[in-house]
Length: 472
Image (tube, rainbow, N blue to C red; front, side):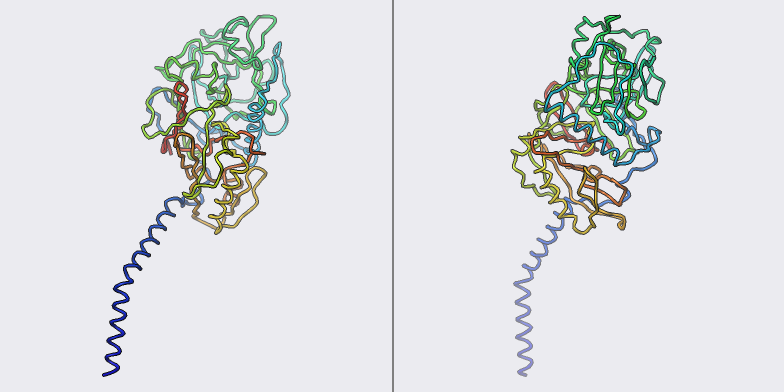
């Protein structure tokens, strides 16, 4: 009987214990579930192979009159043999960044040239490049289509022309022949149009008083020729007469097989400025998540209702300045003093691949990201990307979200395709951000981090906007 009473008392005690503590246990379990869901919310989990480019082309339909299809210039949709490694792409990217930073820090130029030069030597090795993405536009009467790179950091739209007086590089289509167009006209040296060119990019032919242009990039690759007017065709309903462009008669550099370039900078000779009457200096683009897909370049039109806008800050006439105010990793704000970003300033650039940050900001990003990647083996990267992992023994991987905050309360959650960069396939997958040499050098928000967003440039209102889910 005594044992039975003791058993009943013990059972009662357990009942009371469970009665009062189980709600606490449930509460604790609830907190754990909530915390786990919070972690999952700020983590990307993907198949490893999805981080690599495909060999097949999957083109999206364009359904707007003022839209152009965007392709990666070395992607399968271009049907161009790409024999360059990711290491070479990164070297090219650094040359572009060096050129931009030198231009913004010193505002230096290459000087006026007096006469057409038949040949300028390009430095051996990797050319600076002017962009990674191409569109097709029409030039001339009758219209001929040309594949051109587009670049928010370039002023002049130019294409290679016949005849080549110096050197010309191979391109996808036949070169533009101005003698076969009834709407082509050279610009005279004394015209107001010639004076729109910066002095460092302007010259005059002594024999014909014809305006000449030259664009020299950071590694001495170049385009030079006649500054002229021609009919530009975006679509059958968007045709612009007397469009100022460069008819390149001597060109050298690694531009893929693109025929030239579309300049989308804020300058007075860029395409947005010349078409301002119709498009109000507004354009947008969406860069696809992988080179095997296509995106778009829109001019004018309606802006996505979900776009968040940040003001364009003064940088120079050739770049769109923006203000970065913070960053986060895995949903947690990084402890970066806002003055770090204010000191350096920043631009957004469609031609730079990897985002450049002040070293202090990059250090905080790197450490926070690396802490959350402790389950994966580290590996050596290269000179530019130094936070790398070996995924060769994994079929799926998880990595934290990275967000960049801009002035005006705009937060851009970088797409999963824009956080890591395959330097050597799955064996060397690196954090796709890089540090500048010091905190005073200007930051650059690169195209790898812009993927899948509709990026809207409203030059008339002085704003740049970001809308998630612009393309796949």
